[in-house]
Image (tube, rainbow over the protein chains, first blue to last red):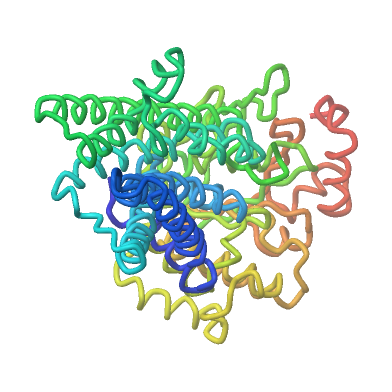
Length: 269
Length: 250
């Protein structure tokens, strides 16, 4: 692995923001709209439930963490699509760049943009709604770690799917976070789902994060249960990351045989 | 020549199902040599170049650069070769400087900022350093492609129709720069073009491909006469239109 080549992929993406600052709206604008909207919805629901339950604390915390994961996933997919739209694969992969370095550059880019977005919405939630993202203390770190790994896995999987099926497959990729959010317990407890769907939730690392978060902020959770949930969530996230990376590399090798790397653009496949 | 070859291709083939895009070709290119790879569209030129670049896996045969097989040393070899092609786009939404910076990092170039300043001056692109690549004329883009292609001081340069659709003035600049690069550095160059007068002016040797096979090879200035043709263009047309007939005669 060459740091210089990972840096090249990273800078290639950062230069886009420098050349065209309106691209920053992709990182911040939608996130801010989302958090403001959910903040007011939570405040309204809170007023209905009086003081029995803090909607802002529970829902807004989950929304901020899920937005973080979604932005990491989309950051990888967007950076990958950028290279498709500019028909750049031929120049990149004819250089000494390896597929692992390329993925490393995409991941680094998405961590930068995802973290910047997370910081912005956490600050806005604090300023407008008095929400403190650090309310659960250092537990935020393992929660974010699980979501980060899972989001990277999703981003690599979506990119691999586009790499395999062609650029138009991006339309299969965009809804994935929304579909997963149904089962991940972001907006409601997993127990809300019918029994048959709950087994799907058990396979989603994010569900362990949001169930634990909700328990900590409402009824409380035992240390043993919390540790077990974190371990299962982490193990699943790492498993998906390995599987997605393996799939991406496999698709790349297939494309080396079919010749589609040299001809990979928006119209070719 | 085989001992000193920078590029040595042995029995290279590429099949797509039943279609033989490249069919058992062998090529050796010596240091400082500029070899023209000629042939009609679909003859296998670009397929051959893509295999040398490591972005297309051969069905059979081997490609050695500086004595090392590309299958086993792809990253190491890729750092020593480079290419420019009319169809290989640099990101249009990066500036000229940013593109050279990104590709300089990819090729592990030391003292990169000084190198970029030198390339911008050498290729007459100083005034365009902060201009987005997509806003350049086709001539300026070709010069930038060539600047990118020599950013790592490659020992093997692959140029796939580098002067296609350029005005004669820019095309001549590119020809002169390529020739002086080969003579100054001893780099080997593989050049494809459909402009036969350009091939005569630049290449010391040509290889004619048709249906994935090398049909003819030799000096572009003497080869036409050996085959009863007035010039290289006539020979090209004969290869393109009657390759099987030519194969029988040979």
